[in-house]
Structure formats: C-alpha cells, structure tokens
Length: 184
Image 1 (cartoon, rainbow, N blue to C red):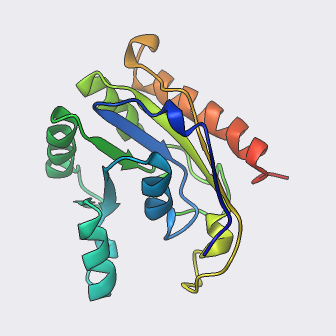
Image 2 (cartoon, rainbow, N blue to C red; image 1 turned 180 degrees about the vertical axis):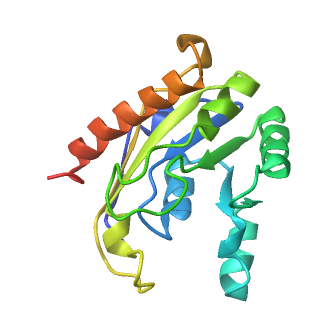
C-alpha cells in the first residue's frame, strides 16, 4: 500500500525493550510494529475502544495494553512491566496522543520510567508520513511514502533520571524527524 523504508532497524536489541515513537496517525502502532520486526505490545488509551469491532479486534490481536486517560494507569504499567519481564517489547508514544505537528505537546516520561524500572533499553523510533497516509481527522487511507528511523538504544545507566532520558529521546526525535523531512 505504501512506499515504506526503515533506517536503522538493526538498532533494536533482543530481550526486553521499550520502543518510544512519535504519534501522527491512527496507523502508527501498526507501522511501528512492522518496523520493529519483532513482536511488541503497545499502550493505547482505552477511549479508542468500543467504536468498531474490527478496530478493537485488530488492536487486541496486535497486543494492545489499554490505558486509562485521566487516572494513574497502574494496571497498564503492571501489565507492561510483566511483559518486559518475560523479555518482550513494549511500544508507546510519549506525546500521549496523536498530534498534527511534532513538538505540539511535551513528552510524558512513561517510556523512560518503564525502561528504568526494568533496566532495559529505550529505543527511539521516528515515524514520518503516517499523518498523510491517514490523518487525524480523516480516517481514509491514502498512498503516501512512510519513512521510519530507529535510533541507537538509550540505556538507563547513561542518564541521571527519567527526565534526562526523556530529554535525550526528544532531542534524538527532533533530529530524526528533520532528517526524514517532517519539518520544513
């Protein structure tokens, strides 16, 4: 359906890993899963569910971990920690929601918290072109090139705290999206 390119896909290590991607579109979880080339579960806000049996079935099949918005997601984090504890991967979107422009919302620290808690790497993943392939307001799929850049793993031991780790993720993401052409 799309012209699809992944740069740096060998950067994703085996074993437990947190993948943190930007979030422009409804297709981002699927694009991130294909780019990772390994099974991962992803965190998705629970308000997404209940609108379409097809969408619900597809996302549960892909391993979504529903996460409540507006409350502390304790059960979601426990599920993610358990999955990481078995050597699995968890993908999430630090922006916390789909955005129309990079930098529109400050990143949340949940990805860094998970990585630090488990002692596993956090791998930044920049997605470009997904907003044009399926925009925020229009649920129609369109042909558009999609580019993915996978960054070098960020290891918790390299950072003083989760804020510093999140800042490093943000700085890498900003450079990667510029490289991919998302920013003019």
